[in-house]
Image 1: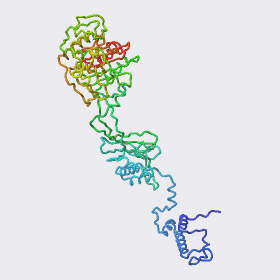
Image 2 (image 1 turned 180 degrees about the vertical axis):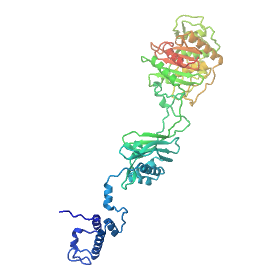
Image 3 (image 1 turned 30 degrees about the vertical axis):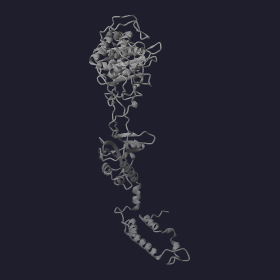
Image 4 (image 1 turned 120 degrees about the vertical axis):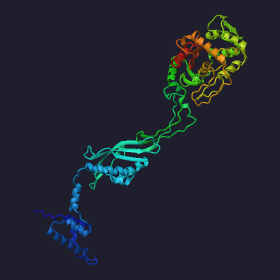
Length: 591
């Protein structure tokens, strides 16, 4: 039996009755209804409703006979609606919605992309999100972007015509340029948006987080955030980094920031994602802190570290300090083992290097370099003293005693010419020893007490007894001789310096330089100083430490570089300490 089909548009009519509450299957059940709707049987449809149905049925029959006018228009007219100009009806719309649509054309993609970028750029979140495939999601994301990335200006520009993406849909590349208040440059990056057809069939931006920034493909948020306040890392005098030097590892963290200047907190555009470290996408304003340049020279520090390391092999504690005599700047500071900065904090007897100050006192007391000061094999104070170089040398002058490091000659002439406390006074007033130094880090000041007995005085004249100094103090002694005046050593320019109450007489400084030069070329320091040219001078020292081994000391200068080194248990001054000091002089001294 052939199935009877109803004319096109009838389903629209059935739909209409359902919207109006009418059920076709139960139409006969309403016959017993009274006019007021209260019959004994099932309720019946009112006469008015029947009239409507009769009218619609009549209109339908008439139009069906005429043809050319869709039934959907009839139903729409009865409902008071408007009909589609295309005459396709509801079924046509549903069919169109289910039928695959062609992707937007390149022109459509370019147009919607331009509108979207313009709305986003001017901050019209509502307009921009309405042009996307997910308006509410896009609205929330765009609003958050504008709030978290408060750019002063936001320019978004297409970077070329729409291209076909891998999914066959057009894609438009664009460039973002954001400018911020106080920033030195603009944050710029490239992204891409895809274009699809929305439910209405119009071209819209396919919304995805990558529209905001390509790095959001894996999730996360982008916002302008303050960067951590910078920690000032001191540099050397030339701006070179000082990290990596063993002797400075404990020193640098203790360097206080500069007294003047303020810390500037930086800002950056930061990508934050769960489980990952925040990533800086663009630094708007870099953080800054007052830069502290130390007086150290990184190149010379490297040499000093190696020199001390070599002499400290076998467990011998050692230290070295290098100073620029013309400025008092500490150029290098090395010590071993790590953990205790013996270069500036130790207190030890300097041995015969103290004879530089004893000679200054004797010269000021009227003794000249050519004054005969016999070097006896032994002498008494009443304690008995002797020399490393055994024998009697009655013709030695003060200069001979100095270059050969004769103990007995200095003890005898010191006890003869100097009053108790003279050495303390000369050390303080002309060499700055015993004053309170502020070099930029904690350090120990030299101690040269007034002797109470002749034995104590005799010990001080040759650098023994109660004298306590370190490499820093003795490097300053060599620097004072070279330049002719005391300049308190400093590790940073803004350190508060002290000045010596007096001054080293010019004639005394001249004689001391001559005596140290002779020692470097003909005396006990000639071996380590061999090959060094220019203005050079040196003095060796061997200090007794109470054990069988003696401590090695050496002070010297070459041009505008003065060095002091000590090696605990290193033996004679020309050996361990002399070798270390000479390495630094060769690297940094100038003729």
